[in-house]
Length: 250
Ligand code: 6GU
Image 1: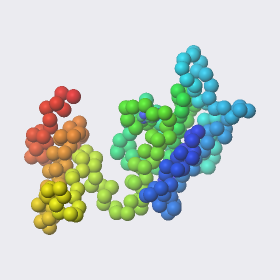
Image 2: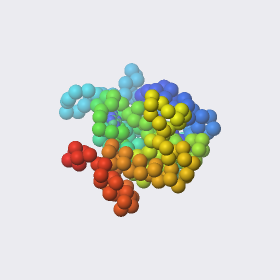
Image 3: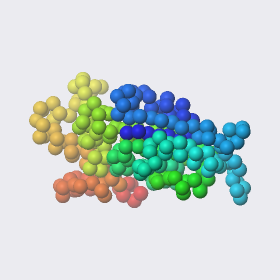
Image 4: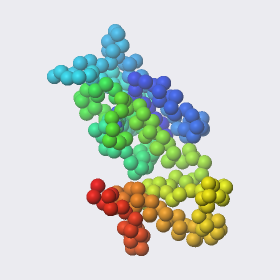
């Protein structure tokens, strides 16, 4: 997976991604990161990349020219022929999901365009952007953190990035259910014992208990996910029992 990030703050992206699991994935060349500073493509002697909005209003708008040239710089590196997803990070985009992470993880190259100020001139967005993505319903100061969130979620789906091949599959959101609770030693902590079944060594019973816990937990915490979950009739009834009344009317 090759990431290309168009940003005014390349050091923020580089610092954020070169630690821990992603750092190791980059050392192993499973993932590469190329940052392009949009300011390097300024068309102004003061290296400015923003200007006042036509029609007036608060804040500044990033100009089309420098963004387009930064994109062309990346385009040349990737190769002109290839199709290329260009993701613009914006609170106006589609809200990022695990399903979208799975889709993006299939690509060989991904371009992230990080905006700042009040946004980017609409004309260059129309020209180069294929996907507009938000990471949730709140407003951040720029697209850098959202792009890092996306790269983290996508990277762990790239084969070889995680040490074990199973854990990416049986975790939260697989089957649209939340993950079951986990326990490790000691067997008793502050008077609380580890659920008996987990010590039984009976893998059939353990799997059944975990599945049940996933259903109950999803019903209590994220009943909205149950619409898409594939449940047996018995699991449906179990879920129904645990959905809290306040959550129904939300
Ligand atoms: Cl992608 N950008 C900004 N600026 N704010 C956000 C966001 C993106 N997603 C949620 N809030």
